[in-house]
Length: 455
Image (tube, rainbow, N blue to C red; front, side, top):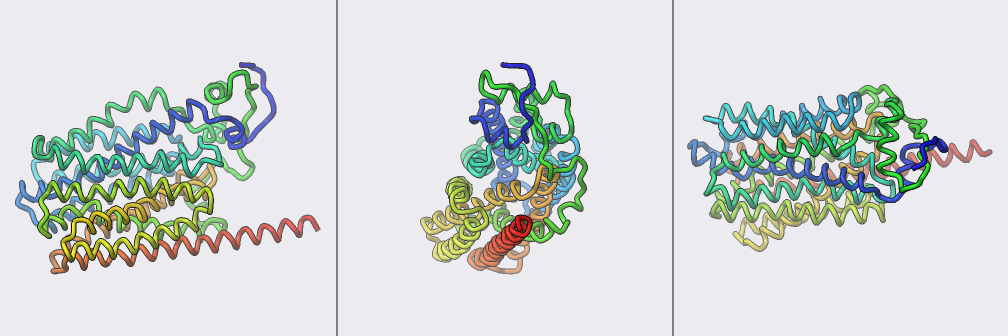
């Protein structure tokens, strides 16, 4: 490799000019693992809920604080670690987040009562809230523009596959190792992954250039990415990016409307995802299904989410991000009605198809909206933007996790509870539709300004 400096290039232009390197593939794999561990940990609590009810003689409503504490930790973790990652780096925050949720999950397995478990789930949630948004951010910042949606979605699919694994393992192993064994697995795996994250994941190249890291550190990463024999360019940050940024940037005139619409879509999607993943096994058990069958059936939600995310990503690159997400949320809403019909008729086939469709339309869109959000904000506030959108979406997690227990106590049937999910599905679709209009208006304004400048 030639050691002298060549032309100056913006970081993204450099990434777009080279083939996908081995280092970039390693980053995608490592972030995939982070997402999978995140998904497993979050979903596992929903799958072990019936076992907790049986062992500690609880009612479904008694578990509401358990779900809510974890969600509150997720929300607070997202709000905390997003700005910290924009200040101190994505890699450092990802590692600390994994340490927190790995240790938290492991210790949770030894909880003697519900109160202790509630407290530990809150602490675990802090780490979970910081890991996922920053995994999305660092992956996005290493992806070429033309393939970003697909590659980030492949990485994010780790979440849905991890959550599906949580359901499959819980259904098979909970009789052998108990709910404690499931949490021990969920805690040990992240801790065993830490050495790989530390030694093989670099800091974001865009972050290093923007924050003026030493040339030696930047060139080390460039050498691992550039084809053999290519002259090392001098990388510079985009002229639109800033070194110092505050949360107020999300509410500036350039991003305010989009920020609110993203927050609405994140919130509505989270309501559905957490109602399905946290409570569906319990709802099905109350309808007469055994625990193992309920776990297997609910895992179709995560499988559908993986399939849907990949299909949605393909069309996002072909048709447009917001337009595809609008359609997929609407499809998810109609699958909610299919699930409702299946629950009312106790039809396993309709229930599986409905849950799979909701996973594809809603959970798949939730992956896509993370990709969309990461490309909406510039580098200097990208981690903050993605994390705070996810944090705001945790409001939906509060509603989704806490409301079902209350609705069950109020006497609503499983069919009626499922029917309520059509409301957030259509609201999420409306938010994406409005972002489509907003972006068209911005593009039109920019074209007019450009024409005036030429005149």
